[in-house]
Image (cartoon, rainbow, N blue to C red; front, side, top):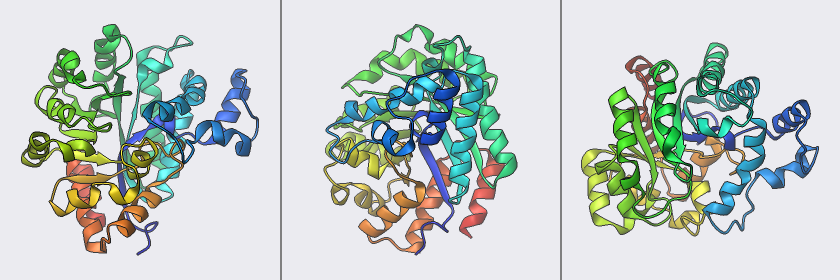
Length: 331
């Protein structure tokens, strides 16, 4: 089975982790930012995690250079467009990109300008390619909370017109959900869909809390429900989408190796599991590669793949019209 030719959906992809290395060089030159290297080959080690990456925090360190060049509206729009262009050229039909607006205010951009630039990049790509998209606004759990509602308010004017979701990301501590209940509630009241990074680093209770306390319809990663019976049962009963990112999960040591990833068991038990990239550049991957790895590792058939694809359609924060379009590729 040719993974490249298959229609694909990516529901968990970070913008700042998915920039073309050459684009970082171009933007750094334009903006007068010093880089540790001025060619792609030598810059890549500063952007891509090594095979022996020890943990999630080391993985997150690879975002410093991308964020540095993402401080102008033009740069953000270009990076967004190029991500969708790259995805479209490998038959990704729908992509939900997530990013942290608060990370891009270092040179005076407003939240509205930042969100508007991402939406413009998506719409430009939609006009040129057979791809649809939306964005999810991520809040980093490690940042001060005093601007969270400002992000929610700024994104509200774009709801269902480029913006669809609210997310919590970054380092995962046990019990973090309790601190964010009022913010998730505010996002829900405004009309956001909610997906939360949880259960990536061994804390199944965080998945349970993300669903029960924060109203999560989907969970980023979520793989450590394997050690938490209540969280596992809740995911199954609520049909909470699991945004698995196999390559990333191995790199961050969420799992030791691909063969020990719970994707196969989740699929066999009919959990709503999806395949995603997480970060195309940092993880040095594509949707084609993620699909290939999963299909081969867990001995899945073409019929299995399209069942997973339809799950991704069902779990997408897309309009009914876009979902109908996406399902046409699975007929």
